[in-house]
Amino acid sequence: MPTNFIVLTAVAFTPHCCPVVGRRGPPRASVQLSNALDAANRCTRLPATPSAVTLQLGGTAPLTDGTVHLRLASGGDDDEQLLVVAASSASVAISRACRELVREHGLQVAAIDVGVREEQGTATPLRRARLATQRWRLLAAYGVWAELHAANEHEPAATQPHQCKVLFVERGVAEHTSAAAAASLHAVGATPVVGGVVRAGSALLGRLGRAQLTPTYPPSLALRLLRYLPWRVQRLAARAWVQSMLAEHPTRAVAGEATPYRHPMESVRVLPLLSPAACADAVTEAEEYAAREGGWSTDRHVAYPTTDIPIRCLPRLEALWRERLFPAVEAEARTRLGLGPATRVLPLDVFVVKYAAGVAGGQTELAVHRDNGVLTFSLLLNAPSEFEGGGTYFERAGRVYRPSLGVGVLHSALVRHAGYPITRGVRYVLVGFCGLESPALAPGFARWRFGQDPPWFVSSRVRLLPPPRRRHVWLGRVRRPLLRPNLLGVVHVYVAPEWRGAERGSALLEHALRALRGRGVTHVLTLADDRGSGKLREWYERHGFVDTAQFTETAMVARLL
Ligand SMILES: O=C(O)CCC(=O)C(=O)O
Ligand SMILES: [Fe+2]
Image (tube, rainbow, N blue to C red; front, top):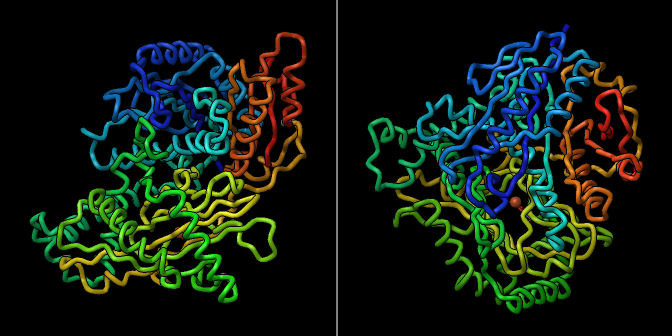
């Protein structure tokens, strides 16, 4: 009989500890730690599940079958700290509810993992690889927050990140030794178990690639030999290197915002580049060309075609690109990647893309893909108010970048990304793919393109946000997980009391549910905390929740899939 494992992860977004919030105050790690300890103590008094749950506090022992492992992170260097998690009494009640769920479905609890300690400085490569996989799990939660935030950019107050607390019961995996890591990978759609290995491998290749690409580093003998290997091997190394270099640097979600984003997966730079007038002129020129020449082309890219016009057909925009835009993009790439003077950045393909909703034959989205070349640049050419949705979606980070007018987004061409669907209006983007040329690289590198081979370039089409389904079923009667062992995704959504029952709370909840559904989460739990009027319960019911007193008095649950 297959063994089921799940991982419970509580993640609280609080302004002082979450690296994405941008309002980091004094660290309050000790307060959080004592809260978490308090919660943990209460956990110990919970009846053990049939799999003989034991609880370890603050331990770092490897996860073992049937063990509840509670890891508490107290933080470290504030800048380096990924996330410190506070477990509140609500989280404890939710853990209890999850545990009941686990019991009902005959699952075993593999881990309750609260927080991750960032140990990059001292950790061994293997440990670092494991930390990287742990970060991915946090990203799943973080991605939900980011989507909430992005969805409400016009009304930021509606989605104060610290109002959103997410508790994951992630998808189970059969390989219990790496249950926590694998479940985190599952949550972000990556391949379980091998993720850490892949990551470690790419870090190694990255180191090789760095020496290859920056001749100022004296290469070791092994690295000198590498350049005699086929250029595709060099390309692989450089690919990992570019990825790792981009990943190491802080990024900003919105140009000019006070606090940089410091997440390693946010390998994205945002640059303000063009004035509104210049953007408007670019759109006019593209539309004039399309009217004159019989429309926009839709077949220039084979695998992931865009509705576009290449910049060589648009002389005014091309001049602007040559004189102003490309130098800025190149300078940014040089700084970010530490390119030596002998390395050139080469524009490979630059074009204006048009997304149009509600128009026959109009493109509304671009599926998740990688681009040709090493670096991708995209710049919004019309005002965000002219369309709904849209933005550049980064799959692994689970977030959508929605830059302002004239702001460019620079990222590795190798990061899987997408043109997020627009639901109204028209969105114009200037997109550019760039390669690198260096004497340290084999000549083929400068023409680097993603094509039919090698197979590791192949990207798959993924669903972004499936349409909401209205059917909700009593959790107690749900039997499907039993038919599909090892699959279960439960998230606790915490809506802060002042948002409950209110319109803005509704928006928050709806976006959260949609985002979670899009990630394959099957059930959402929440605490109604109704003080007797019944109004709050009604509010949750309107959002598809049903009362489930069998868990805790106040728990309510919605089934998403
Ligand atoms: O629409 C976007 O923001 C992304 C476009 C893109 O990724 C591409 O054209 O390759
Ligand atoms: Fe792309």
